[in-house]
Image 1 (spheres, rainbow over the protein chains, first blue to last red):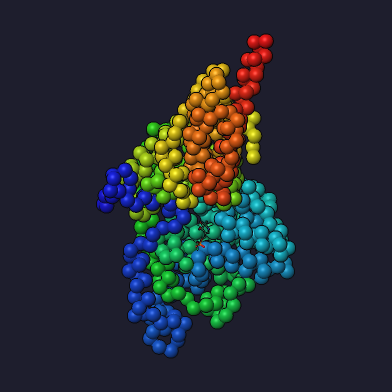
Image 2: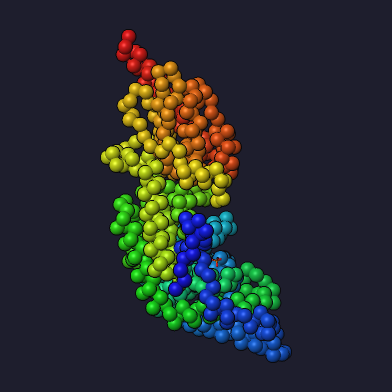
Length: 415
Length: 133
Ligand SMILES: Cc1ncc(COP(=O)(O)O)c(C=O)c1O
Ligand code: FES
């Protein structure tokens, strides 16, 4: 195990501890190893049919396709490579909506989706589609009864994310899939934060389209995949036209090393997910327990049980999130505070859960993953406890709380 | 967000954190901002009988720039008359701390906090004067 290295003056770490695994993950060294030959010797165009350079690149790509299909319980013919989950989500939503637009004009999604889904839906609305944005409960999950009510024979596609990027909660995929199948709407899920973290089976869950992102589970950035069901067949209008690669759904020469890296990341995750989740759950419990034991007024955002083990989203009441991030400078984390965003609005995901704005401002997202160690978690606990305690001593709201004043009872001049 | 050295210095070594008793007749308290907006500042001044700010304290819920802005103004107001302190402009605070445009509102809040503390002090002393008459 590596030992955390201190700065010269001994006051902090030479490099902060990375606790932002929902933003991105480092490439697993095994993934990099698998990719390397495809940059140099095996550099051929995988679509070149006439020589060995093309064939060996094609072999690499097709093996990767098999590996992606395998972790999803899909057939390799149902997997196309893309540049990432943003592209996959765009292609799934626009592709289906455009193809079926003569018969269907309705899309269902949910308010806590990633911006690339929400923005795509806004775009479809401008084109004349109608979109229903389902709310979520306090736990971050949609209501299945409500879903069943809004899906009609005019609904082309239902897009509900598998795992939320801010709060890590897992939507009930199989139940959603069953409703969509019964109603005759396609079910798309943005599984950028789910692949490699939770078991997925596109058939058992009745998933018709599914988006994958390489860099969220130790693969390279700039590559992803879209699963598109063949039976019953889902048809798409392509967004990128050209040489007709990927069965015409996504033209362009495939980036062989990136595809190979994505495939390897899937193979590793599939083999190790069980053991890894046990280890991450233990780290997560240690982190949460360690903080809660030493700090009062810490609130977990989103459900604890229906959540991937690598995510915690905590509100540290009476301490503003951006100020806190500055205090935990030995940790690389992110916050739902408005102050960290250009818009000065607190996180729309926390808002959707019904978290009060003043609480949303105090949130930190702590993401742990494959390379997080016990030592790092222990350091993080001390560091967070110290920073929160110091900032609370500086907080007028903490002082009022200590004096028994209800913050809600004061008439604040909101600006 | 990259912070200026001055912001970091005030954030790590805030000057004059704390509280005076609100009931003290020589103390003016300004409480501005709102928790829902992510920033609340409490700034207190202690004024001598001849109208000079002798001491100041603050507590802030907010980002590093908000903490630095309030820490800085507690330093600036000490030794000033009420009118001099009331003339401190947010632009001077922002300039001194090299705040980026998205953080200007933190300096505005600090200016508001001084003004509110002064107004509170004046209101209190006026009430005292009236009571004495
Ligand atoms: C839930 C979710 N969907 C989509 C994306 C976008 O993925 P990519 O970076 O591969 O385009 C992300 C990553 O930010 C995400 O967390
Ligand atoms: S307190 Fe929100 S940006 Fe400064």
